[in-house]
Image 1 (cartoon, rainbow, N blue to C red):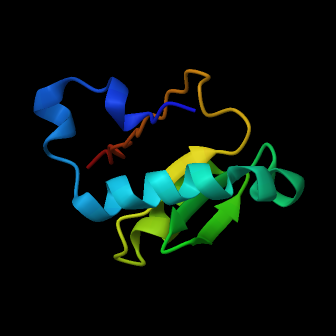
Image 2 (image 1 turned 180 degrees about the horizontal axis):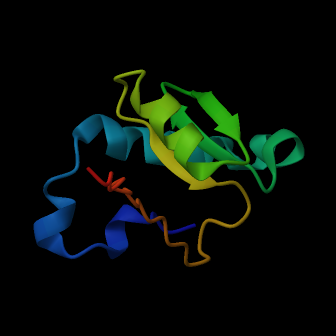
Length: 96
């Protein structure tokens, strides 16, 4: 499978940490074995292993990024499907 990072515009691809690119390559090599246990789940993959997994993309993203290992983040088996993750902040207005 072609890497997801190779489809990025060059100016963005240049900003990716080399470890993240290596982790993506290692993910694709291990993907078939991961399908049986993690199919349909979000994973953070780094240093040849799943460092976080679950059904909540934001929880998995934060947990995997907290490792500091520049993980590759994806949904196993749905890597080529478009996905939007939005962050929304709410501001509470208190009446005086």
